[in-house]
Length: 220
Image 1 (spheres, rainbow, N blue to C red):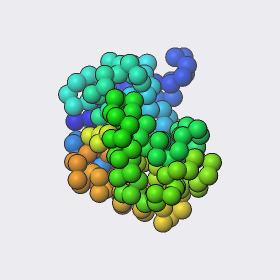
Image 2: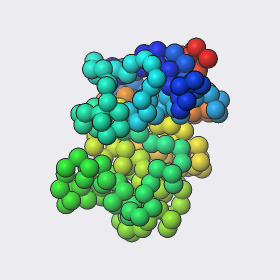
Image 3: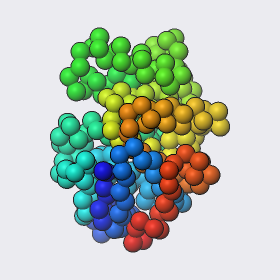
Image 4: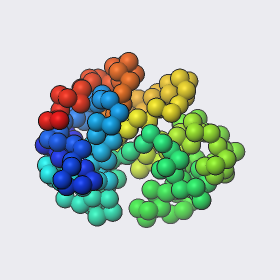
């Protein structure tokens, strides 16, 4: 189970953007979180991805409370969650080739370079990237191609949980459909749970087992 319990979070303790958010996701379940722009969805997604420490509340991952955030989180918890953000160019190191971008989490967790590259090549095929594209850097590919690489990076350590924060907001319909299909194939294969954050209720309703509104899970 992935639980967000009474989460309050923001970037200024006096003005939290998330107040009292509570949400639970079962293993293998896909949950859509629907809300307007600026309501705090992305901040909650960062908390769920263990990238932002909440001001109050608790994240419980597979029955274990989370006490560390970002690099201070235990590796077992940190690698249990994969995350894809809305803007791939803000979450990709412009110095890395797409192959190295995908393999980055493997190298950060002690995998040998050859093993990391092999895993990156495998994931690249699954998200629709050709071998020729893997040698390019972010500025040499389209937004859709870069987001495919970012999704592969999120999956490379085989996480049990996925957080997709407006993953398809900047993409065309065909790329959106392709990336959603990749996520669903991964979920069926590995039994992963999913939190899909967005403002497109049609997409979330088609994609997820259930969709909840922001107002249903928060106090603001």
